[in-house]
Image (cartoon, rainbow, N blue to C red; front, side, top):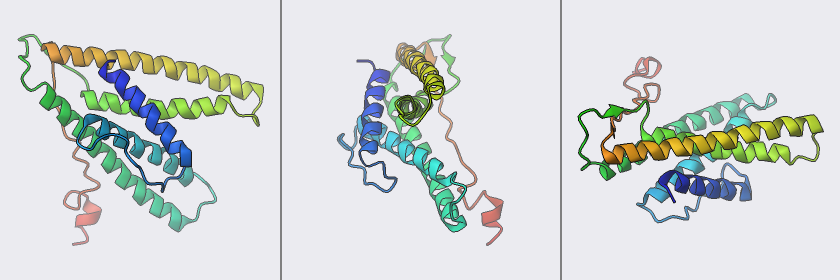
Length: 201
């Protein structure tokens, strides 16, 4: 099994696990050993799954404004956790390929491996929820057909992205490409760089 295929397997497992309770406040019992890349990938997808459903909840037009603000703060925190996990996965790759001799004509990719894997995690959620739409008994045939067409595209997209990630990792391992990771440096969460926050000092 390739690395990207393993990611898909873990993401599908965690998405299914989340929907056992379908509760944004449910405790996550990570099935993988702490300190392993599998543990980090599972944690990453759980964060994505919870945030997916928080984004659904906050779009309720009848939501209480105070509750909505609390949810917005929670989503902001979740976004930071998500970014931190992506960077943790990229650190794994940097360590894994640290001793690779980079070829003189090696090129850089448009994104790091972990940010591509981040898209695989989101695709697992899109596929789960689009498949749910195709199985609804309260929707008409046109809705089912439209969602089935979208599901087919999502499955093809995941297959293509899986292939591309595996090719990228092979290229890095052989020195044909090299990793260069830029930390996200999100300014709005930093009291030193967000003018609304440092202006209150």
